[in-house]
Image 1 (cartoon, rainbow, N blue to C red):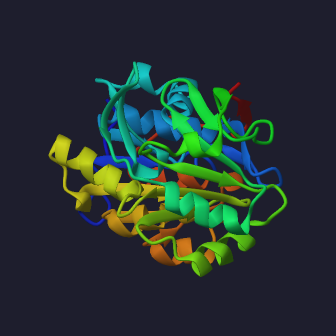
Image 2 (image 1 turned 45 degrees about the horizontal axis):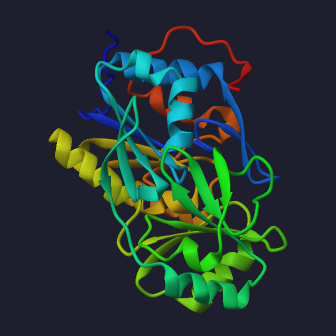
Length: 292
C-alpha cells in the first residue's frame, strides 16, 4: 500500500475531486469535457486510491454520468469498498457500484424556472432522471448530457420537486448568465454558472460542500482532514469548506480566491501536482489517453 506523504504534520483522510477541468481535460470552446485524462493524473489518482484514503468524485454531473467516469478511471476496481460520489452539485450522494442514492435534497423549482425563462424564453431546460438521463423541454447541444433525453412539456418538468434544474442557452455567454443570475436573485435556491451559458439551480444551501459534509459525517471524518481540488464556480464552496482547498490554474478569479492554494492548469496536470504532495505515485509518462 502506498504511504501518504505528510507535509507540515498534515495529510488528508479524504480527497474530493472535481471532474471536468480537474481530472478530465475539457473542450472550453464547446463547454464540455473531451473525456481525456493524462497518464500523470491517472497515476496520481491511482496512488491516492492505493493509500487507502477515501477518494470522492464531486461534480455537477448527474449520477449516471459520474458512474461512467468512475468506471473510466478504474476507481471501483481500486477501492476497498463501494465509492461515495457527490453528484448534481451536492443535491445527490450515491454509493457505487451499482448506483444507490443514499442522500438527496429536492425543492420546488417552478418559480425559479419561470423567472429565468421570462428573460431567456428560448433556453433549454433539463431535470435529471436518475440512472436514465434527463427530461428536457428541447434537445441540448450534442455531447452536453449523458443518457437519454426525454422530451417533456416545461410545466410537467417541474410539476414535482426535483434535485436540480439545468438551464442552457447556446445563444448566450457564461458572463451573460452570471449577470442574469445576479439580477434575478433566484431566492430560495443555490445556483451555479458553468463555462458556457449553463445555469444549475439547486435547493437553497446545497452545494458540493454540503454533499461532502454528509459523506464526512457518514464516514466519521472531519472536514479539516479533507483535500478538495476543483476549477469551476460550483467548486467555490467546496474549496472554502475543505481543510485544504486547491484551485486549478485556469479557474476563474473568484474560485482561485476561495482556495488555500492554486496549482497548475488542467493541461499542466495541476491535479497530479497537488496529489503528489501527499501520495507517491510510480513513474509517470506524460501522454494523453482517451476515455471513451
